Length: 235
Image (spheres, one colour):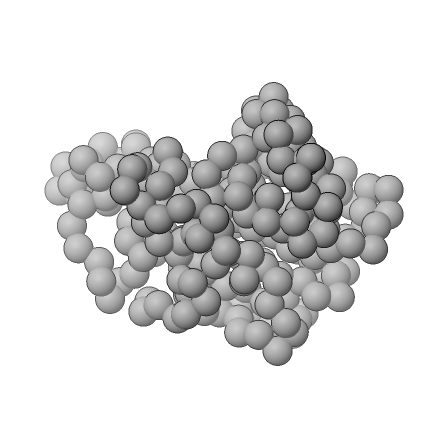
């Protein structure tokens, strides 16, 4: 299956920010690979969103902690499209507001890093060959201001440290991929009313809009930045 539409892959896209990011990209006419840890969840989300968008939503099972599964999906995308234009690393776990760094279970921290850092890292590595074939490649890491060293305080130790590390990875990748024209940025959606964010936050479409902004930057756009609502945040 070949397509002239941009091909975008969103991890953790069956709910929350990921689902809305997939919807907004499809609304722009993208062919969106909507990924979730369980195939049924991806299929349900894609079926629910498809009638309202002009783009194509294709469901895929993807657990970013499963290296073989990530590599297998990269091969599938290669065979089907021959390229990838946008990768949105959105999958994340464990907003551990009730934990403290002084006594948190380090096995829990390791599990959080496995998804929030290493999951994004291995997915980026697996899809880089396909991004390099794109005329306008974009890589977006969905981060959080809780990972900002400038504003960091106690609490949420696993999540905050994982997002700080994801921000560092963003800078590393942006510098190393500059010659490949791949724009790499981290985006904080802000406090959004999702299952992870909890009630009281902003509407999910607002949080996803910042992610979509980074995913659709012009070639002259920034790389190696940390943004919310299209505006720079302190690292």
